[in-house]
Length: 296
Image (tube, rainbow, N blue to C red; front, side, top):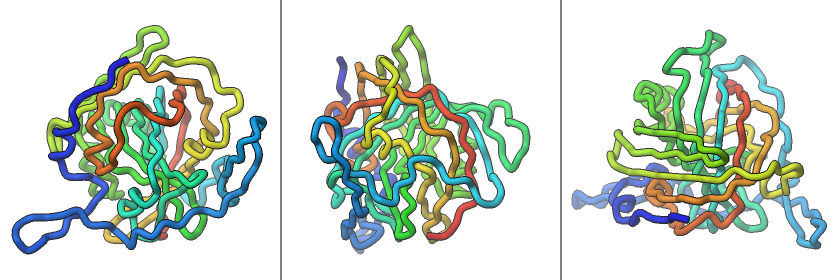
């Protein structure tokens, strides 16, 4: 098992999830987006077979609600690995968009590193776009909830191998896409992804390898909490919006991390170290559709 790369390089880069404010002397410091009060969703407690009490929020939707209005774009997410670390909610709260807060499970929130391939993207009902519609991606994401009970994700960074996608996503929907050189390979049950940032903040890297294992026939409540996310929160033109998506529930498999060398998570201002402290997962993928954004 390989775990490595010093964190020095990551710490020299600006944290994508945080704003910067001037101190008046030419320096800048990270500033929270909102009052870092931590609120947790009202839990729905159930006892597992082992006697451990687990809690999904009472308003948590296990299946995606139908999209309202028109579909803006759709694509396939393929060959995804989900790597997670537990995080105190008070650490993540300053990184949340206005009007949202960290979503929690048994008192913890989470940060995820997710490498995958995006395929067959189409926009506004057009045919899938060759080249532009197929690319590798690696994202760092957090877990959010708003006062309407919408449980989603917040992206700190989204690495893409297509510069045009990075520029378009930044300017239209406010997502912090970056342009990176990426690779993905398969050898038997092993999946490997590599990323090296080109723009902005050139040089950040990650390398992930997992051994894909048995199908998870009945995902536990934590796995459902981390993967049943039917939208994202982001700031767009100075306001927070919710962008819903729809897809079938994930078909998950066990994943054993064999290589992890990462600078992306710490560059987002998230103090993780070592291997994930939550069981990792893999999925062959789903087809997903995104609807129109609405203000939070």
